[in-house]
Length: 121
Length: 365
Image (cartoon, rainbow over all chains, first blue to last red; front, side):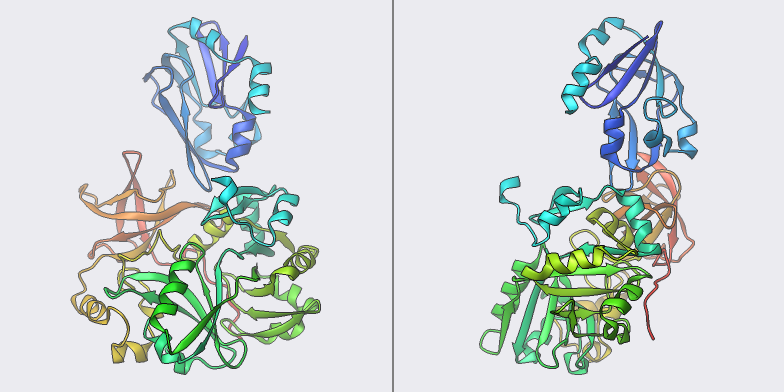
Protein backbone atom coordinates (compact mmCIF):
# COMPACT_ATOMS: atom_id res chain seq x y z
CA UNK A 1 0.00 0.00 0.00
CA UNK A 2 1.49 3.28 -1.13
CA UNK A 3 0.30 6.81 -0.44
CA UNK A 4 1.23 9.63 -2.78
CA UNK A 5 0.37 13.33 -2.79
CA UNK A 6 -0.32 16.00 -5.40
CA UNK A 7 0.67 19.66 -5.41
CA UNK A 8 -3.07 20.44 -5.21
CA UNK A 9 -3.28 18.61 -1.85
CA UNK A 10 -5.00 15.39 -2.83
CA UNK A 11 -3.78 12.10 -1.39
CA UNK A 12 -4.01 8.78 -3.20
CA UNK A 13 -3.54 5.38 -1.59
CA UNK A 14 -3.26 2.34 -3.87
CA UNK A 15 -4.12 -1.28 -3.17
CA UNK A 16 -3.80 -3.49 -6.26
CA UNK A 17 -5.26 -1.47 -9.12
CA UNK A 18 -7.78 0.45 -6.95
CA UNK A 19 -6.84 3.84 -5.56
CA UNK A 20 -8.62 5.73 -2.79
CA UNK A 21 -8.48 9.52 -3.09
CA UNK A 22 -9.14 12.32 -0.63
CA UNK A 23 -7.80 15.71 0.39
CA UNK A 24 -4.95 16.14 2.85
CA UNK A 25 -5.21 17.31 6.45
CA UNK A 26 -3.31 20.41 5.33
CA UNK A 27 -5.95 21.17 2.68
CA UNK A 28 -8.82 20.50 5.09
CA UNK A 29 -7.23 22.84 7.60
CA UNK A 30 -6.82 25.57 5.00
CA UNK A 31 -10.44 25.22 3.87
CA UNK A 32 -11.87 25.35 7.38
CA UNK A 33 -15.26 23.85 8.20
CA UNK A 34 -16.44 21.77 5.25
CA UNK A 35 -20.22 22.10 4.77
CA UNK A 36 -20.80 20.25 1.51
CA UNK A 37 -18.96 17.86 -0.79
CA UNK A 38 -20.08 17.34 -4.38
CA UNK A 39 -18.93 13.97 -5.69
CA UNK A 40 -19.00 12.49 -9.22
CA UNK A 41 -21.09 9.55 -10.44
CA UNK A 42 -19.74 6.04 -10.16
CA UNK A 43 -18.54 4.91 -13.60
CA UNK A 44 -17.24 8.30 -14.65
CA UNK A 45 -13.90 8.24 -16.45
CA UNK A 46 -11.29 10.73 -15.31
CA UNK A 47 -8.09 11.99 -16.82
CA UNK A 48 -5.29 13.15 -14.54
CA UNK A 49 -5.93 16.79 -13.65
CA UNK A 50 -9.72 16.66 -14.24
CA UNK A 51 -11.84 18.43 -11.67
CA UNK A 52 -13.91 15.59 -10.18
CA UNK A 53 -15.28 16.94 -6.88
CA UNK A 54 -15.99 20.24 -5.14
CA UNK A 55 -15.52 20.96 -1.46
CA UNK A 56 -17.58 23.79 -0.01
CA UNK A 57 -16.49 25.52 3.18
CA UNK A 58 -18.54 28.27 4.83
CA UNK A 59 -16.68 30.81 2.75
CA UNK A 60 -15.82 29.30 -0.60
CA UNK A 61 -15.95 26.40 -3.06
CA UNK A 62 -12.72 24.58 -3.94
CA UNK A 63 -12.17 22.07 -6.73
CA UNK A 64 -10.58 18.66 -6.24
CA UNK A 65 -8.52 17.25 -9.13
CA UNK A 66 -7.89 13.70 -10.27
CA UNK A 67 -4.33 12.65 -9.36
CA UNK A 68 -4.33 9.92 -12.04
CA UNK A 69 -6.34 8.59 -15.00
CA UNK A 70 -9.00 6.04 -14.19
CA UNK A 71 -12.64 5.17 -13.63
CA UNK A 72 -14.65 5.95 -10.51
CA UNK A 73 -15.65 2.67 -8.86
CA UNK A 74 -17.06 4.05 -5.57
CA UNK A 75 -17.90 7.33 -3.89
CA UNK A 76 -18.10 8.12 -0.18
CA UNK A 77 -21.85 8.68 0.18
CA UNK A 78 -21.56 9.36 3.91
CA UNK A 79 -20.01 12.77 3.15
CA UNK A 80 -23.41 13.96 1.94
CA UNK A 81 -24.86 13.84 5.43
CA UNK A 82 -21.60 14.33 7.34
CA UNK A 83 -19.36 16.69 5.35
CA UNK A 84 -17.46 17.59 8.56
CA UNK A 85 -15.83 14.12 8.35
CA UNK A 86 -13.44 15.74 5.85
CA UNK A 87 -12.13 17.93 8.69
CA UNK A 88 -12.26 15.25 11.37
CA UNK A 89 -10.58 12.40 9.50
CA UNK A 90 -9.32 13.64 6.13
CA UNK A 91 -7.04 10.70 5.42
CA UNK A 92 -9.45 8.04 6.69
CA UNK A 93 -13.26 8.21 6.90
CA UNK A 94 -13.17 11.47 4.94
CA UNK A 95 -12.09 9.78 1.66
CA UNK A 96 -13.82 11.00 -1.51
CA UNK A 97 -13.70 8.35 -4.24
CA UNK A 98 -12.16 5.08 -5.32
CA UNK A 99 -10.61 4.97 -8.78
CA UNK A 100 -9.61 1.98 -10.93
CA UNK A 101 -6.20 2.98 -12.22
CA UNK A 102 -5.60 2.89 -15.95
CA UNK A 103 -1.91 3.74 -15.76
CA UNK A 104 -0.18 2.87 -12.49
CA UNK A 105 3.06 4.48 -13.70
CA UNK A 106 1.44 7.90 -13.17
CA UNK A 107 1.92 7.37 -9.44
CA UNK A 108 5.66 7.74 -9.92
CA UNK A 109 5.19 11.38 -10.82
CA UNK A 110 3.50 12.18 -7.48
CA UNK A 111 5.11 13.17 -4.19
CA UNK A 112 5.82 10.82 -1.32
CA UNK A 113 5.05 11.91 2.22
CA UNK A 114 8.44 13.52 2.85
CA UNK A 115 8.23 15.51 -0.38
CA UNK A 116 4.65 16.59 0.39
CA UNK A 117 5.58 17.68 3.91
CA UNK A 118 8.35 19.77 2.39
CA UNK A 119 5.85 21.16 -0.15
CA UNK A 120 3.50 22.39 2.60
CA UNK A 121 6.17 23.44 5.07
CA UNK B 1 0.38 43.34 -4.00
CA UNK B 2 0.87 42.37 -0.36
CA UNK B 3 3.40 45.12 0.26
CA UNK B 4 0.90 47.77 -0.79
CA UNK B 5 -1.86 46.56 1.54
CA UNK B 6 -2.91 48.93 4.29
CA UNK B 7 -3.01 47.88 7.93
CA UNK B 8 -5.49 48.84 10.62
CA UNK B 9 -4.18 49.92 14.04
CA UNK B 10 -4.98 46.36 15.23
CA UNK B 11 -2.98 44.51 12.57
CA UNK B 12 -0.29 43.33 14.98
CA UNK B 13 -2.96 42.08 17.39
CA UNK B 14 -4.65 40.06 14.61
CA UNK B 15 -1.35 38.39 13.77
CA UNK B 16 -0.63 37.76 17.46
CA UNK B 17 -4.07 36.11 17.83
CA UNK B 18 -3.31 33.76 14.92
CA UNK B 19 -5.56 35.54 12.42
CA UNK B 20 -5.39 34.25 8.85
CA UNK B 21 -4.71 37.47 6.97
CA UNK B 22 -6.18 38.15 3.53
CA UNK B 23 -6.48 41.24 1.32
CA UNK B 24 -9.86 42.96 1.65
CA UNK B 25 -10.71 46.40 0.24
CA UNK B 26 -7.01 47.27 0.13
CA UNK B 27 -6.34 46.18 3.72
CA UNK B 28 -4.61 43.13 5.14
CA UNK B 29 -7.44 41.77 7.28
CA UNK B 30 -8.16 38.62 9.35
CA UNK B 31 -10.63 36.34 7.53
CA UNK B 32 -10.66 34.03 10.55
CA UNK B 33 -8.83 33.14 13.75
CA UNK B 34 -8.00 29.65 15.05
CA UNK B 35 -11.63 29.26 16.25
CA UNK B 36 -12.71 29.08 12.57
CA UNK B 37 -15.58 30.70 10.70
CA UNK B 38 -18.23 28.28 11.99
CA UNK B 39 -17.11 28.65 15.60
CA UNK B 40 -16.76 32.43 15.32
CA UNK B 41 -20.22 32.72 13.80
CA UNK B 42 -21.81 30.71 16.62
CA UNK B 43 -19.77 32.58 19.23
CA UNK B 44 -21.29 35.85 17.99
CA UNK B 45 -24.86 34.49 17.89
CA UNK B 46 -24.58 32.89 21.34
CA UNK B 47 -22.17 35.09 23.31
CA UNK B 48 -20.17 38.00 21.93
CA UNK B 49 -17.68 38.66 19.16
CA UNK B 50 -15.24 41.50 18.60
CA UNK B 51 -14.74 42.70 15.01
CA UNK B 52 -12.08 45.11 13.77
CA UNK B 53 -13.86 47.28 11.22
CA UNK B 54 -11.24 50.03 11.24
CA UNK B 55 -10.90 49.70 7.46
CA UNK B 56 -14.28 51.43 7.12
CA UNK B 57 -14.33 55.18 6.52
CA UNK B 58 -15.14 57.54 9.36
CA UNK B 59 -15.75 61.27 8.93
CA UNK B 60 -17.29 64.29 10.60
CA UNK B 61 -19.50 66.61 8.60
CA UNK B 62 -19.95 70.22 9.69
CA UNK B 63 -22.00 72.99 8.13
CA UNK B 64 -24.97 73.11 5.78
CA UNK B 65 -26.75 69.81 6.29
CA UNK B 66 -29.17 70.36 3.42
CA UNK B 67 -26.18 70.10 1.07
CA UNK B 68 -25.32 66.66 2.44
CA UNK B 69 -28.94 65.58 2.70
CA UNK B 70 -29.40 66.20 -1.05
CA UNK B 71 -26.99 63.30 -1.73
CA UNK B 72 -28.57 60.70 0.57
CA UNK B 73 -31.98 59.27 1.50
CA UNK B 74 -32.23 60.24 5.18
CA UNK B 75 -34.18 63.14 6.69
CA UNK B 76 -31.40 64.90 8.61
CA UNK B 77 -33.80 67.45 10.13
CA UNK B 78 -35.47 64.50 11.87
CA UNK B 79 -32.14 63.08 13.10
CA UNK B 80 -31.86 64.16 16.72
CA UNK B 81 -28.81 64.30 18.90
CA UNK B 82 -27.96 60.76 20.04
CA UNK B 83 -29.59 59.08 17.04
CA UNK B 84 -28.23 57.09 14.10
CA UNK B 85 -29.76 56.19 10.72
CA UNK B 86 -28.87 53.73 8.00
CA UNK B 87 -28.94 55.61 4.71
CA UNK B 88 -27.90 55.42 1.06
CA UNK B 89 -25.66 57.63 -1.06
CA UNK B 90 -27.24 57.67 -4.53
CA UNK B 91 -26.13 58.61 -8.04
CA UNK B 92 -28.19 60.67 -10.51
CA UNK B 93 -29.87 57.51 -11.83
CA UNK B 94 -30.91 56.43 -8.36
CA UNK B 95 -28.14 53.80 -8.27
CA UNK B 96 -26.52 53.08 -4.93
CA UNK B 97 -23.04 54.65 -4.61
CA UNK B 98 -22.78 53.32 -1.06
CA UNK B 99 -24.70 52.49 2.09
CA UNK B 100 -23.65 54.28 5.26
CA UNK B 101 -24.49 55.21 8.82
CA UNK B 102 -25.16 58.84 9.69
CA UNK B 103 -25.44 59.86 13.34
CA UNK B 104 -25.17 62.67 15.88
CA UNK B 105 -23.04 61.41 18.76
CA UNK B 106 -21.84 64.88 19.69
CA UNK B 107 -24.96 67.05 19.78
CA UNK B 108 -23.75 69.08 16.82
CA UNK B 109 -22.22 67.98 13.52
CA UNK B 110 -22.71 64.58 11.91
CA UNK B 111 -20.68 61.38 12.13
CA UNK B 112 -20.49 59.25 8.98
CA UNK B 113 -19.35 55.64 8.65
CA UNK B 114 -18.99 54.36 5.08
CA UNK B 115 -17.67 51.20 3.42
CA UNK B 116 -13.93 50.61 3.12
CA UNK B 117 -13.84 49.96 -0.62
CA UNK B 118 -15.85 53.09 -1.41
CA UNK B 119 -14.60 55.53 1.21
CA UNK B 120 -12.24 57.56 -0.98
CA UNK B 121 -14.90 57.95 -3.68
CA UNK B 122 -17.64 58.70 -1.16
CA UNK B 123 -15.67 61.38 0.65
CA UNK B 124 -14.47 63.00 -2.59
CA UNK B 125 -18.06 63.03 -3.87
CA UNK B 126 -19.42 64.55 -0.66
CA UNK B 127 -16.65 67.15 -0.54
CA UNK B 128 -17.22 68.17 -4.15
CA UNK B 129 -20.99 68.33 -3.82
CA UNK B 130 -20.97 70.31 -0.57
CA UNK B 131 -18.05 72.62 -1.41
CA UNK B 132 -18.53 76.10 0.02
CA UNK B 133 -21.44 74.92 2.18
CA UNK B 134 -20.16 72.17 4.41
CA UNK B 135 -16.89 70.69 5.55
CA UNK B 136 -16.04 67.00 5.60
CA UNK B 137 -13.27 66.00 8.01
CA UNK B 138 -11.91 62.50 7.49
CA UNK B 139 -11.23 60.73 10.78
CA UNK B 140 -8.47 58.48 9.49
CA UNK B 141 -6.82 58.62 12.91
CA UNK B 142 -9.60 56.56 14.46
CA UNK B 143 -10.15 52.81 14.71
CA UNK B 144 -13.60 51.20 14.71
CA UNK B 145 -14.55 48.11 16.68
CA UNK B 146 -17.84 46.23 16.70
CA UNK B 147 -18.83 44.22 19.76
CA UNK B 148 -21.74 42.02 18.71
CA UNK B 149 -23.88 39.34 20.25
CA UNK B 150 -26.37 38.78 23.06
CA UNK B 151 -23.65 39.09 25.74
CA UNK B 152 -22.30 42.40 24.38
CA UNK B 153 -24.57 44.26 26.80
CA UNK B 154 -23.24 42.26 29.77
CA UNK B 155 -19.70 43.22 28.83
CA UNK B 156 -20.65 46.86 28.43
CA UNK B 157 -22.59 46.80 31.71
CA UNK B 158 -19.25 46.10 33.43
CA UNK B 159 -17.01 48.41 31.41
CA UNK B 160 -19.25 51.33 30.48
CA UNK B 161 -22.68 50.97 32.13
CA UNK B 162 -24.10 54.21 30.70
CA UNK B 163 -23.73 52.82 27.17
CA UNK B 164 -26.34 50.20 28.03
CA UNK B 165 -28.95 52.95 28.33
CA UNK B 166 -28.86 53.30 24.54
CA UNK B 167 -31.38 51.36 22.49
CA UNK B 168 -30.87 50.15 18.92
CA UNK B 169 -29.65 52.97 16.63
CA UNK B 170 -28.84 55.42 19.40
CA UNK B 171 -25.36 56.86 19.87
CA UNK B 172 -23.23 59.11 22.04
CA UNK B 173 -19.79 59.81 23.45
CA UNK B 174 -18.60 57.74 26.39
CA UNK B 175 -15.54 57.06 28.48
CA UNK B 176 -14.34 53.49 28.11
CA UNK B 177 -11.24 52.46 30.09
CA UNK B 178 -10.31 56.12 30.40
CA UNK B 179 -10.60 56.74 26.65
CA UNK B 180 -13.19 59.01 25.06
CA UNK B 181 -15.04 56.99 22.43
CA UNK B 182 -18.03 57.49 20.13
CA UNK B 183 -20.38 54.58 20.46
CA UNK B 184 -23.62 53.47 18.86
CA UNK B 185 -25.92 50.58 19.66
CA UNK B 186 -25.77 48.97 16.25
CA UNK B 187 -23.77 46.64 14.05
CA UNK B 188 -24.12 44.48 10.98
CA UNK B 189 -24.74 40.98 12.29
CA UNK B 190 -28.43 41.07 13.22
CA UNK B 191 -27.44 40.88 16.88
CA UNK B 192 -27.55 43.44 19.68
CA UNK B 193 -24.23 45.18 20.09
CA UNK B 194 -22.10 48.28 19.94
CA UNK B 195 -19.88 50.00 17.40
CA UNK B 196 -17.05 51.87 19.06
CA UNK B 197 -14.94 54.59 17.40
CA UNK B 198 -11.60 54.94 19.19
CA UNK B 199 -8.48 57.08 18.67
CA UNK B 200 -6.09 54.82 16.71
CA UNK B 201 -3.42 54.91 19.41
CA UNK B 202 -5.90 53.57 22.00
CA UNK B 203 -7.40 50.83 19.79
CA UNK B 204 -5.06 48.09 20.99
CA UNK B 205 -5.76 48.93 24.64
CA UNK B 206 -9.55 48.82 24.17
CA UNK B 207 -9.48 45.72 21.96
CA UNK B 208 -7.39 43.81 24.53
CA UNK B 209 -9.70 44.91 27.33
CA UNK B 210 -12.75 43.64 25.42
CA UNK B 211 -11.03 40.37 24.43
CA UNK B 212 -10.10 39.79 28.08
CA UNK B 213 -13.81 39.51 28.95
CA UNK B 214 -15.00 35.91 29.30
CA UNK B 215 -17.86 36.33 26.84
CA UNK B 216 -15.75 37.77 24.00
CA UNK B 217 -13.71 36.22 21.16
CA UNK B 218 -12.09 37.87 18.14
CA UNK B 219 -14.10 37.36 14.95
CA UNK B 220 -12.84 37.62 11.38
CA UNK B 221 -14.34 38.76 8.09
CA UNK B 222 -15.50 35.26 7.18
CA UNK B 223 -17.98 35.06 10.04
CA UNK B 224 -18.85 38.72 9.56
CA UNK B 225 -20.00 37.76 6.06
CA UNK B 226 -22.04 34.72 7.12
CA UNK B 227 -23.61 36.68 10.01
CA UNK B 228 -24.68 39.61 7.81
CA UNK B 229 -25.95 37.21 5.13
CA UNK B 230 -28.18 35.39 7.64
CA UNK B 231 -29.32 38.82 8.88
CA UNK B 232 -30.39 39.68 5.30
CA UNK B 233 -28.00 42.64 5.16
CA UNK B 234 -26.42 43.75 1.88
CA UNK B 235 -22.71 43.61 1.15
CA UNK B 236 -21.84 46.62 -0.97
CA UNK B 237 -20.41 45.77 -4.38
CA UNK B 238 -22.16 42.40 -4.30
CA UNK B 239 -25.80 42.75 -3.22
CA UNK B 240 -25.98 46.33 -4.42
CA UNK B 241 -23.97 48.75 -6.50
CA UNK B 242 -24.28 51.79 -8.78
CA UNK B 243 -26.52 49.82 -11.15
CA UNK B 244 -29.13 48.91 -8.54
CA UNK B 245 -31.62 51.32 -7.01
CA UNK B 246 -33.10 51.12 -3.49
CA UNK B 247 -36.30 49.72 -5.06
CA UNK B 248 -34.42 46.85 -6.69
CA UNK B 249 -32.27 46.30 -3.59
CA UNK B 250 -35.43 46.06 -1.41
CA UNK B 251 -34.13 49.00 0.63
CA UNK B 252 -37.09 51.37 0.20
CA UNK B 253 -37.30 51.45 4.01
CA UNK B 254 -34.01 53.40 4.00
CA UNK B 255 -35.76 56.16 2.04
CA UNK B 256 -37.19 58.58 4.62
CA UNK B 257 -40.93 59.09 4.12
CA UNK B 258 -40.49 62.89 4.02
CA UNK B 259 -37.75 62.61 1.39
CA UNK B 260 -39.86 60.25 -0.69
CA UNK B 261 -42.80 62.68 -0.55
CA UNK B 262 -40.56 65.59 -1.49
CA UNK B 263 -38.76 63.61 -4.20
CA UNK B 264 -35.59 65.60 -3.54
CA UNK B 265 -32.92 62.90 -3.63
CA UNK B 266 -30.71 61.87 -6.60
CA UNK B 267 -32.57 59.73 -9.13
CA UNK B 268 -35.94 60.46 -7.49
CA UNK B 269 -37.79 60.29 -10.83
CA UNK B 270 -36.31 56.87 -11.68
CA UNK B 271 -37.13 55.54 -8.25
CA UNK B 272 -40.70 56.95 -8.25
CA UNK B 273 -41.25 55.33 -11.66
CA UNK B 274 -39.97 51.95 -10.42
CA UNK B 275 -42.25 52.09 -7.38
CA UNK B 276 -45.17 52.91 -9.69
CA UNK B 277 -44.38 50.33 -12.40
CA UNK B 278 -43.67 47.36 -10.12
CA UNK B 279 -41.75 45.66 -12.93
CA UNK B 280 -38.08 45.82 -11.90
CA UNK B 281 -36.22 42.89 -10.38
CA UNK B 282 -35.94 42.84 -6.59
CA UNK B 283 -33.55 41.43 -4.04
CA UNK B 284 -34.86 38.36 -2.22
CA UNK B 285 -33.62 35.66 0.12
CA UNK B 286 -33.19 32.04 -1.01
CA UNK B 287 -32.90 28.88 1.05
CA UNK B 288 -31.28 25.98 -0.75
CA UNK B 289 -30.76 22.29 -0.21
CA UNK B 290 -27.37 20.66 -0.71
CA UNK B 291 -24.66 22.76 -2.28
CA UNK B 292 -24.33 26.42 -1.30
CA UNK B 293 -24.90 28.83 -4.19
CA UNK B 294 -22.23 31.49 -4.58
CA UNK B 295 -22.26 34.93 -6.15
CA UNK B 296 -23.00 34.78 -9.87
CA UNK B 297 -25.07 31.58 -9.83
CA UNK B 298 -28.14 31.86 -12.06
CA UNK B 299 -31.67 31.44 -10.72
CA UNK B 300 -34.17 29.61 -12.96
CA UNK B 301 -37.89 28.95 -12.77
CA UNK B 302 -39.12 25.36 -12.76
CA UNK B 303 -39.28 25.44 -16.58
CA UNK B 304 -35.60 26.32 -16.79
CA UNK B 305 -36.02 29.99 -17.75
CA UNK B 306 -33.39 32.24 -16.18
CA UNK B 307 -35.17 34.65 -13.83
CA UNK B 308 -32.37 36.04 -11.70
CA UNK B 309 -28.87 35.91 -10.27
CA UNK B 310 -27.40 35.16 -6.85
CA UNK B 311 -25.43 38.15 -5.51
CA UNK B 312 -24.13 36.55 -2.33
CA UNK B 313 -24.49 33.12 -0.89
CA UNK B 314 -22.89 30.60 1.37
CA UNK B 315 -23.53 28.32 4.27
CA UNK B 316 -25.52 29.80 7.16
CA UNK B 317 -24.18 28.23 10.38
CA UNK B 318 -27.22 29.29 12.46
CA UNK B 319 -29.71 28.32 9.74
CA UNK B 320 -27.59 25.16 9.42
CA UNK B 321 -27.93 25.16 5.65
CA UNK B 322 -27.09 27.08 2.51
CA UNK B 323 -28.61 30.56 2.17
CA UNK B 324 -28.30 33.21 -0.52
CA UNK B 325 -29.55 36.58 -1.65
CA UNK B 326 -30.15 37.52 -5.25
CA UNK B 327 -32.09 39.58 -7.72
CA UNK B 328 -35.12 37.97 -9.25
CA UNK B 329 -37.90 38.89 -11.69
CA UNK B 330 -41.33 39.99 -10.50
CA UNK B 331 -43.75 37.10 -10.26
CA UNK B 332 -41.29 35.06 -8.20
CA UNK B 333 -40.92 37.34 -5.18
CA UNK B 334 -43.48 35.72 -2.91
CA UNK B 335 -41.91 33.81 0.01
CA UNK B 336 -42.44 30.09 -0.52
CA UNK B 337 -42.02 30.26 -4.31
CA UNK B 338 -40.00 27.28 -5.54
CA UNK B 339 -37.18 27.97 -7.98
CA UNK B 340 -33.87 26.37 -9.00
CA UNK B 341 -30.38 27.75 -8.57
CA UNK B 342 -27.80 26.54 -11.06
CA UNK B 343 -24.72 25.47 -9.12
CA UNK B 344 -21.94 24.25 -11.44
CA UNK B 345 -24.57 23.46 -14.07
CA UNK B 346 -26.79 21.46 -11.75
CA UNK B 347 -30.29 22.71 -10.89
CA UNK B 348 -30.58 22.81 -7.10
CA UNK B 349 -34.03 23.41 -5.57
CA UNK B 350 -34.39 26.67 -3.66
CA UNK B 351 -37.24 28.45 -1.91
CA UNK B 352 -37.78 32.21 -1.87
CA UNK B 353 -37.49 33.12 1.80
CA UNK B 354 -38.42 36.23 3.73
CA UNK B 355 -35.37 38.12 5.04
CA UNK B 356 -33.77 37.98 7.53
CA UNK B 357 -33.07 34.22 7.65
CA UNK B 358 -32.39 34.55 11.39
CA UNK B 359 -34.64 36.85 13.48
CA UNK B 360 -32.99 40.14 14.43
CA UNK B 361 -32.00 40.36 18.07
CA UNK B 362 -31.78 44.15 18.45
CA UNK B 363 -32.37 45.87 21.78
CA UNK B 364 -35.31 48.22 21.28
CA UNK B 365 -35.89 49.08 24.93
